Structure formats: structure tokens, C-alpha cells
Amino acid sequence: MISQNGVDYEQILRLYRIAENKGEQILILAELTASDEETIIEVLKDHGVFNPEDIADSLRTCTGCGRKYIARDRRGRAVCPQCAFRRRKQRENEKKKKKREEKRRQEDGR
Image (cartoon, rainbow, N blue to C red; front, side, top):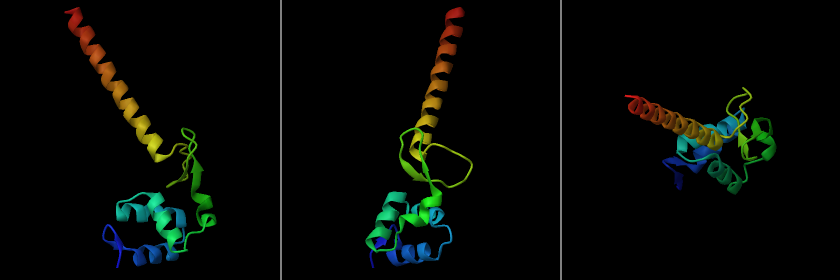
């Protein structure tokens, strides 16, 4: 049987079919198989199981890139995981830059 990182497609399909919250289940299956949501959706589409209406309540539109993504929570997060990661890295780089500038100023002041 063909598998996705050790989890066979029959398990993926069964777990998706029995899930109450299909959007959340796609995220769980993506983590379980070490893949992304798009890959899981493709597997489900290939087997004729995926219905976009099943995850309509879980979809959000990213304010950063406009991409549709499945929201894990309902806390009003308005950016997709990719944009959130990019923003987090940008903030980290800004902090590092600020620390370097402070260190330079301190060294120049001595």
C-alpha cells in the first residue's frame, strides 16, 4: 500500500471521514504525515473524499498575502502560518540589528 511518511492513504481517508471538524483534521493529518495542508487536500481530492464546503468554517484569508488557509483556532489571527513565520523572523532580525547597534554605540562611547 502507498503511504505518506508511514501513514497509509486508507488511514488518512478514514481519519478524515470520521472527523467532526474537517478543517482541524486536515491540520492534524498534515502534522501526522509531516506534510502540508495542500498535500493532504490533494490526497483527499484524488480519492474523491474532499468537499470544500466541509472546511468553509475553518478557512480564513491572510491579510498579508491574501492566501486562504485553515485556521487552527478562532482567536482572530489574520495571517497565514507562512506570513506569521516571516513576520516572526523579521522581528527577530530587527532585534538582532538593534542589539548590534547598541553594542556599537557602547563601544564608540568608551
